[in-house]
Length: 90
Image (cartoon, rainbow, N blue to C red; front, side, top):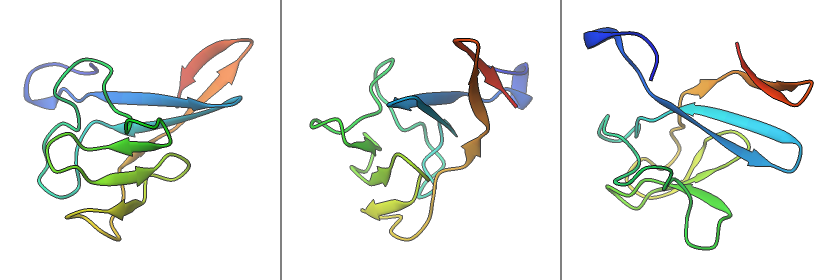
């Protein structure tokens, strides 16, 4: 979590190969967290990000909604990268 109080926000990171993809933990359909349990952001087959509230599916590479109530919308990206084996935000 970053920030404090009403200004706090949460994010999550998905690693695909050597690439990191960061997103705000916020479904674009109803502004709720994507997960019910910690670290549960992926579909059962591990190929898509999944909103556990609405079962919407998102592409890992760009957060675009591929199926569900938010079709055509996307997750809010958070810039992340690897530097010397460490995750850097920003």
